[in-house]
Image (cartoon, rainbow, N blue to C red):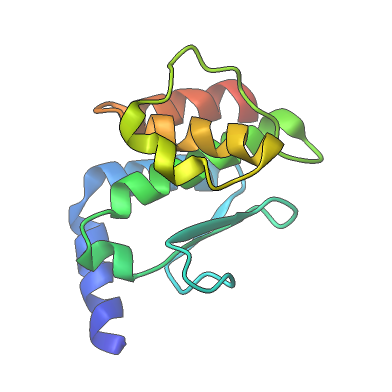
Length: 139
């Protein structure tokens, strides 16, 4: 586990997009923790009330660290938009077909929230879009 954490730490340093997005999140008061999320099996997790984001170190080994952080950053923007709870952002980007299996397992309103996060996560400019959403809703 220590080796995984050290590998994750070195990859984070090398990944400027990850670092940039993390810095933006932290500038808006979110704490980004590179450790196992409190929800078993999760790659990433946002706790709205504490403004804490967990990123599971395994995502660095799987090469999905950046999309995982983008996904949680969209939830952070939804958190800012909703103040007391997450609120959909009304994005103009339809969810790509490839993302539908990931958010269709959720029900009702959670499905809409996850659809937005997965939609931005898979965009080639997902980091930039996530930063724009954070700037729009958290400033």
